[in-house]
Structure formats: structure tokens, C-alpha cells
Length: 219
Image (cartoon, rainbow, N blue to C red; front, side, top):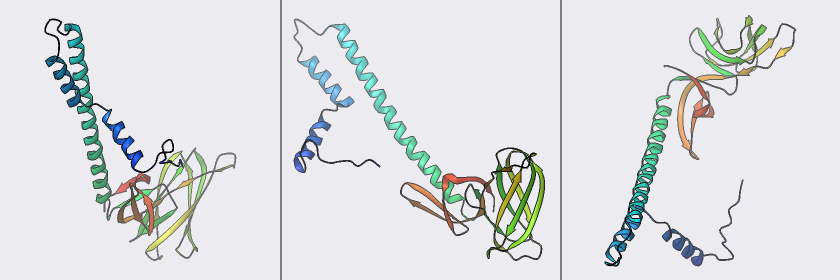
């Protein structure tokens, strides 16, 4: 992380602030440019008026400056609008079931629960072990052959209780080599927080960033 030294050529405190003010006054806006152009027209020599070509060039410069100023204002407004939309989308996730590309937990309520994982290439054999919140294996799913990409599995919990579960996926190709698996977490969003210019969601008691969400299920 870069460290910014507030010392400028050995000058600190009020002198540095004064230099900052002087530097700011050197930046001309469209109003300053227009005032200079009007003053130039008022004080020109009547016997030797400004050349028409120079005058047109200065008007063109003023027009370009005004367009750039307006464009900058519009970009700032777009940034505020996009930030507002993102915050609204995050709040709308409260109470909904989402999947994030982190961890390997999923919430089960009712008869079954869904979880997701991703395979980088086709697998000839896939086996999934299901664990309860105490880390005890409660079931195993033999999924057989699966293609590459995002996989969605539904686990029927049977006599198991509602609650948090986790899973471990073992995948092998046709030659018996193990395939790395990207696991994901699924659960309901119970809180949304804004901190350090980022949005954080609380899912299954864990805090994740908003940009980790890859799927949303209505709830």
C-alpha cells in the first residue's frame, strides 16, 4: 500500500495549504475562460481588432470546454445513480436465498436443500458427502458422470433435522485423476451492511461481499 507524504519540498502546514490554493486557482473553468474572452474583446485595439480566425478558434475552445464540463457532471450523476441502484439491489436480497462462491455450507428447511458446485472439466464419477453441523457424515450421493460447469444438487434430508449442513465433493476423470471442485455456499440473507465503500451480506452467520453472489432464489 502506498504511503502518501504530506510534506511538499520541505513545506508543511499553512504554507502547504496556501500552495494547494494557488495550484487550484491555476485551473480555469468555462466561466473563467468566458470572462477572459469578453475582457479581451472589450480591451482590443479598435484600429487592430482580433483576427476572425483567432476569435473562432477561441470560441471553439470554449465550446469544447463547456462540453467536457457537462460530460463530467453527467458522469458524476451516473456514478451516484449506479451506486444507488447497487445499494437497492443489495437491500432487496434480504430474506432471499442466494448462492455465493465461498465456503461449502447450505441451509436445509423442509424436506430438502439445494447446494451448488462447479467442475472445471467433465467428470466421469462424482461423489458428494453430506455433513451435519457437528461434522458428522449423514449421507452420501453418488452423482455419476457430470459435465463441466455449474452443478445444482438437491439433497432429500429424510429423517435429518432442519439446519446448517456442509458438503465435500470428490470428482474423478476417465483416467481416475481427481478433479478440483469449486464449492459454494447457499443460504438466506439475514443482514446487509455498508462498510469501507463495500456492501456485505450475512448468510448462514457468515459475512460475504455483495459481488460474490452468483445466484438468487426468491423467498
